[in-house]
Each structure stands twice: as structure tokens, then as C-alpha cells.
Amino acid sequence: MKKVFITGASRGIGKEIKKLLELNGYACIAPSKSELNLQDIDSINNYFKQCDTDFYAIVNCAGINILGDLESIQNHEIDLMLDINLKSPLYIIKSIIEKMKQAKDGKIVNISSIWGIKSKEYRTLYSMTKFGLNGMTRSLARELGEYNILINSVAPGYVKTDMTDKNISNEEQDIIKDQIPLKRFAQAEEIAKLVLFLISENNTYITGETIRIDGGFLA
Image (tube, rainbow, N blue to C red):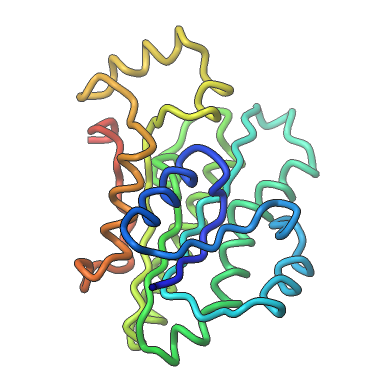
């Protein structure tokens, strides 16, 4: 049974990814916040020192979204967003990659966002981290390709999750839906299906891509 390491699996998109992968025969290792603190490099290092790092795939799904205008951005918010959304995926990949290289086989999926392709007001921190994540993905695809390790970003548009309901009022959601060709938000399981394909044996040649899944919103 192939093992997959996944972050952010307690709710939303990550929860659906974990559920779908397990239904398809993967063994998912998804540490809780108490087991792995993504804000703390020492916690990440200590976690992987104590566990078997022989993983077939990595799914970096954990993320936060702090909205606000430029003047309201606080220093601790900058650190928090960078630590969780951008730095922790890199640290996790670094911790696991050696055995993937030895096996000459592996898949990595970073959950990004359409706001890592374009942006809008009040999403400075979020876009900063997601643009960075997409850049990391492309660079690592070039570096790791010779080891048959495929790495891609998945960039969801609007997805019906707790985070969406927290950041966007019901009235604004209705306005946004009118701007999406499919006239609805994605369901988390639809994102999970794309991730499943990207880490499966059916994906043999897609790497270095940021794949939008947004119902045509950015078309």
C-alpha cells in the first residue's frame, strides 16, 4: 500500500483529499496540529526524525487566508502566512525527498489557489504565499525530474468550505457565482479528484504545472 503524507486534512479540501485517497487504496499519514506544528521548523524536523519517511507522495494542503488592506497587515500575520502556506511545504519536501530520489519515483501536489495566478485587493499576504508556492513547484519540477518525481500545484477557485463561508458573506457568494461560467462554487471532493489523478499511476508526464480548477472563473 502506497503511503501519502498530507497536511491540512482535518477539514475542507484536505479532509476530502484524504478520504478519497484512502478509498482508492492509499495509506494517508496526516498528523494533527498537536503532532506537527507547521509554524515551527524544529517541530517539523523532530517529527520527521521520529517517523519513517518512505512516502510515495506528498500533498501540501494546509493553508490559511488572512484578508486585509496594506495598512492593517501585522508583522505576526506575515510570519504566520509565510510559515504555514509557503515555508512548511518546502521543509516537508526537504524532509521526505531523499527516499523518493532513491526510489526514483514520487508525486508531490501543492494546493495553491487562483490567487496565486492573479490577485485582487486585500489578498496581499495570501497571493504572496501562493505565487511563491507555484514558483517553488516549477523550480522543483526541473530539479527533481531526473528522479522521476512529478510535482504540480493545484489552484482551486471558489470552493464551498468553512474558510469560504468565513471570508465571504452569503450575499457576496451569490454575486461571485454569477461571474463563474458554471454558476456555482466547487465542492471539495472535486478538487480531491484532481489530486487523486495527479498522484496516481495515470499521471506519468505532467509536472511543473499550476492547474486551475475554477469552473472557468479565470477563463
